[in-house]
Length: 177
Length: 103
Image 1 (tube, one colour):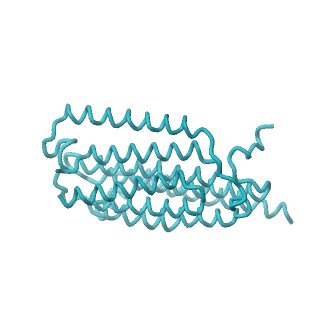
Image 2 (tube, each protein chain N blue to C red):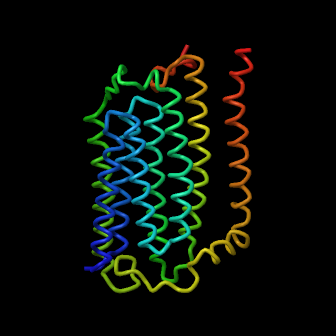
């Protein structure tokens, strides 16, 4: 019962703040609502037993991505200020398309849920009992064991993103001189 | 009343479609990037929930989510760098005014 209340409260918080992220007029407020939505998702990770991932979510998303977005919003403030209208187009088609997509996924899920039944351990029953193999230690062992190649690829990706960002930003400064 | 995998997947679908809605309707390029972060989070939530409901949970869903987070961080760094570079040249942050490659 507690987990149901927790899930519904966190789900409502996530959906409401995500809705505010995409609809609110002030882009700075949108960034703050994004931080709230990401924090709610991190709390949902905790309800799923993914404690390490929740910490990473808070560190990387709220600590880095949202702060970076706020930096850029402030650096481009002359354009994003109140003078410029944030009028949006295609609201009705976009709302229609995303609502239809969401209902398609939900209907497909519910249909397969009814076919699957609700036994424990089943995909649409309660969660199976978590083994001892779900902590950060196992995650690290897998990262340096079976999944070492994607792990190294991700480090190369991050390095190249860093270099590319410096190249993109730094070039302008040379041109100005 | 138990919470099943379907609950998490439905929440992921709603979050995904909210993000798509934002990415389509936002004019501000930073707003589009933030809506894309919502999409990444919806996918991550589905990954973690699906991994948790495996017959023998071994954390592979969390591993996938970890890789998605790294890719999303790289994407957001590059996207914001490009927005900043365009802003420096043309004082523009609206996606439909970024038409340097159109002519």
